[in-house]
Length: 351
Image (tube, rainbow, N blue to C red; front, side):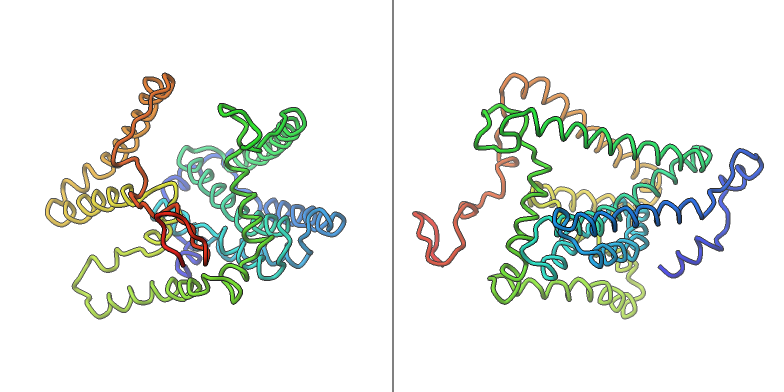
């Protein structure tokens, strides 16, 4: 990370930068633009936390703490995203921290996650767009202005549409009060609501702390921190094994955040495909790997998207569903059994 940070200031200019420097329209963005945007956003957010503290629930120091977390993790997450195309999430970390600091305040927990996690993901997405614009020779100042205008328009339209739906659609987001075929079930909003209840209202202390049943899971924080060090030690101990440095634990562990909805079947398939084409083909037929590996990845993604569209128009729209062993979940008959102590259900173990 230190090498990457130094390279961003003193690194060698790539061919795109050298080409664009020949034309006056490709002017660099002044640093003051970024500083002004950062300061104005922080001041506006601080104003909301101070003057609407009963609605926002998060104190001013919580906002500063969330901003520090976002700034500290932007660089390492950006490096992982740039090298692996996978972005580790900080949503659980931010929810966990605020749940301990301010238990019983669900809105504060959601706001802390928004400022500490979502602002970081937006920064990575912002950099991603700038990199694409850099390759396409789009002037950086134009990219900055368009990003700013797009953010204002998107935020305003989203808020207006959400306000309109909440005031016009009866029983919106209440699954048990809506008709079976209603589209207003709000699955994404339900995730935010569930997180606010679990981490904010109930709190991690009553789930993963001394008052809960899952305190042993906290040891995995230590395991995740020591994991890359163990890989590095193995690499030093066995320097001739070239596959050891290729182990990327943030990617391997971060991928499990997709479970659910992904199942073990999805992960086994992608592990097998990745092992065959990233290790075996690279080791025994390096010419194939260099020529076809990225093409294979693109065709697998395109084939999945094509089949999704085809199945939707040919089967789903006709009310036909496909049920086979690969789509029936984890094949665990006990998955629906309660885990609370003393609850008796036929066919389930009693804890």
